[in-house]
Image (tube, rainbow, N blue to C red; front, side, top):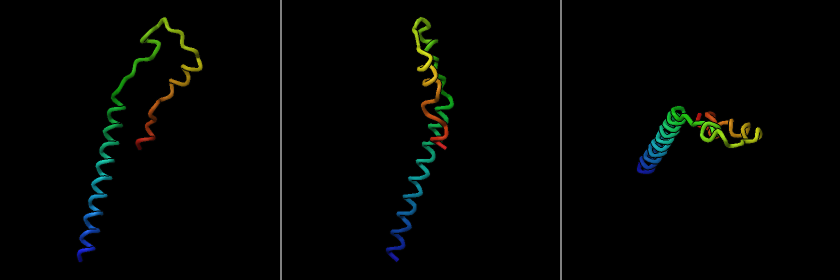
Length: 68
């Protein structure tokens, strides 16, 4: 009986931890969707930015699929 009780407690703690992780990931996704980053060209229009770099930085650093 004691062993079953211990396993139930471990299961509940594990479940709580997973739920907390899920809430945290959901919150990160919400924050990410609300952020609007200015383009580098807007920050300093006189700066020369090679086309290769522009193509690389135009890709999202944190794709949404990471959090889903």
